[in-house]
Image (tube, rainbow, N blue to C red; front, side, top):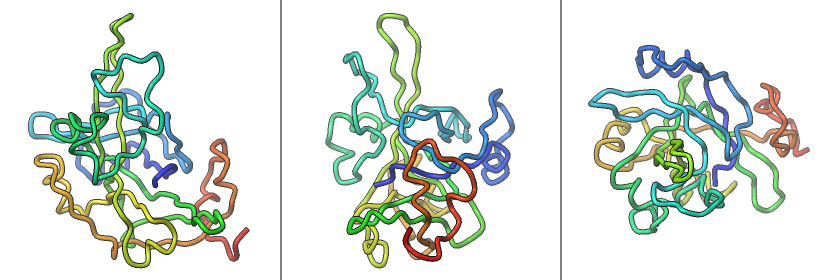
Length: 214
């Protein structure tokens, strides 16, 4: 599952998706984004892409508990259309989560690996979003989850799940109709140091290849 990822800065997102600057709080590049962080997302707004900030960990609009749902940062593709936590967002409010890459931990020895596109570009992870309004204060919270699917081929040697990484030509179909198409052959990956195990660690050294398991 995708529990950590590398997030691009605002300028890189605007350059790749040709978005005019409308966000007053620019995003910095981050190398170790963990669930519950505020992250950049893209969504369709009257036929155009818009950039917004959302909490990574979906809170559905109908949520009434005092705390947000646990483990709501990843949504399984196989369950998204039917499970109540994801169902409404899957039908109506899909989004893209821009990323430079993400981390997975090999299940056999917990060795972390960094996954990224082979090409020099950002990748759009298929996402779900929801807007929740606090009934006590009336404050609004935008939140999101990353869609995951069964890993195949060489990817499965590291982990049995993988984020749904959309090729550029599949992004519009996901936003408009919820159609999913992935391109795992377009990914590269390498082992990294266990520095990334700490959610407080930050910096470009986290994605540098590790010469040996550490």
